[in-house]
Image (cartoon, rainbow, N blue to C red):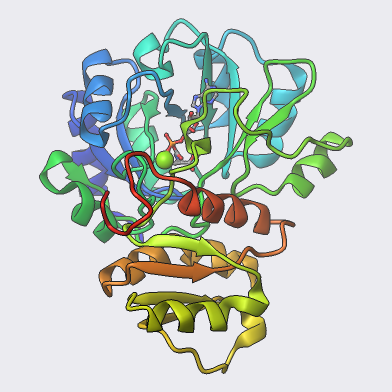
Length: 332
Ligand code: TXA
Ligand code: MG
């Protein structure tokens, strides 16, 4: 599905007027504002309920514009941009003067990417500037992968929702810090570590926990309403049945190896065997189990290779400890 020219023009007008546009990307929907308008950027934080110290990603229309937004472009950044843009890769570089500190949470670095979605690229081209956009969900909750998710979660708080259909990749971009001597992955995402390593020619460290300010790395991120419990694949059926008997409304992520197995649960999601399909569906599955009234989701981690690394990262965050939540359920 592609957005109409009329919709693109309308969205560009909203951005010019300092408004907020929810825009489709190949990863997840973003909540966009003119990157150079500090008041519009401030509204993003307000609508999301996100602390102002948490930096945003600036979306630009092509790798050729990178130099306009950052202080300098080291050869590694150039190489990765040329190879992976447009695409689900975000590069962290030294902040250029065009980027207000409001967009970077006060940091002297800035995250930049070129989204691989026709409607996003058409909007960036019509608007002519950079669009700063976090995922279009409330702080800490599950990222939206359809326009309907955005409307359900943010409603009237967004001035315009540009509908570009469901997101193809389904998990957020991979964030790579290229400010240091050795590039490092800050968040696993749509571009796999293996693909990055093949281009760079050397191994990259698996994301370390809390060295940098990446709110996506806080334990309680990407969380549905239901509590998420991770167990070994071999224990999914027994754990689900036990919790269901204890009175929970259990949702199950049934791994492909258990297809066809009878499960005692309130709702069951059959996890696709391809990791690309799993990534595409992941956030929608979590939302769906919430919608069906589950209070507990039992899942297991995929093998952490390829897109499995990003999926496992999001599931761990969804299962992580939640602030101000007692061990009980649904108190968030
Ligand atoms: O796929 C995506 O990346 C989506 C789409 C909309 O582009 N966006 C997204 O934005 O996931 P958000 O705000 O939900 O996550 C952006 C992440 C945050 O974890 C933030 O901390 C990190 O990028 N980030 C932004 N600027 C940074 C910087 N200068 N240094 C380190 N991390 C940064
Ligand atoms: Mg987010």
